[in-house]
Length: 382
Ligand SMILES: Cc1ncc(COP(=O)(O)O)c(C=O)c1O
Image (cartoon, rainbow, N blue to C red; front, side, top):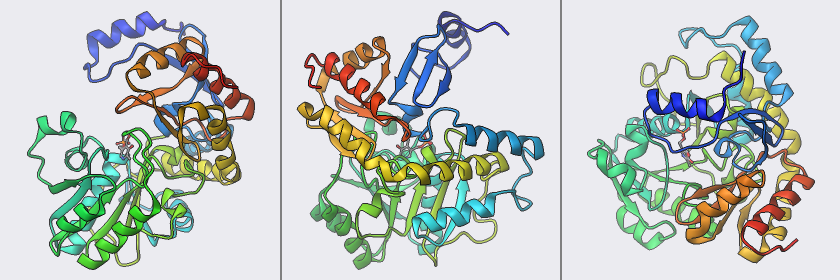
């Protein structure tokens, strides 16, 4: 088969694909922390499919798990017990400290499930979420996503919600009441540019939820599965949420999401479902992914600190391998310059450069990334 060039990708994309995305590169191959474009240029990948490819690209154990399962059974639906699904649910329960799991196909769907679960088990209808929070683009998850530019054109979205300034516990206290089903938050805001709140904020949400009888719903789609150096970002605090949503890094790029919930919170028969969710391939990929992450997790914080040392001049915000730094309007230019030098980074909201590399990234690769970023920013620090 002849390989397509970037301009061939572009021509087909422009003619046949709805223009919801802006892109100018074609990534066609990956291995470890490196990806290659259609012309064969290599890049160290600190985007990792947006915090997804934590085990690196095409980790042999994940590839093998998917291929082995594909030879056995690709799909059977949730009308039957699904190979690997129970094992994966058990593993997720063990690493998150929650009670049971429910599977979805994406992070947005995991949030939709959390909204439904909170509604049906509390019998309440109101939610509170935070400014700059991102929870997905489906109708339900978009309703609790703050960014007006992406949400408002689609309102009304059928979810009763109030937004409160991220970090403002006094404002939260004023709006959470006996009719609130849940408070939805990211323990670290990812799309907003890696905004890390003090532990007291997370503890305060717990207290306010407990006082009002509302559920605490932690969106760990981006922060979960080892990204911050622990299985959950919440595990950096003493607080446990009532519902946790997961996706992104859970299956190394095979589409999957999940929610895990505390003991008395579960869907009853027919309350929720999905044809593909928790399918055999996704579960096999996730089990292999967790196996790999278990081995590399102890090193994630140290690797983040190595980035931190190299980028110290820019006051980076770092928790494990979730790194953000505010560089303002030059962010798109820096992203482009880094790509030209063979390093992929990404601009999150408000001029925040975000690095979410594979957790398997090696020290020499970190040093090269840091050198390229410093060069792009015009100050070689290393
Ligand atoms: C915190 C958070 N929640 C939910 C989502 C939505 O996940 P998905 O894109 O898999 O639907 C994202 C995606 O960026 C996210 O960062």
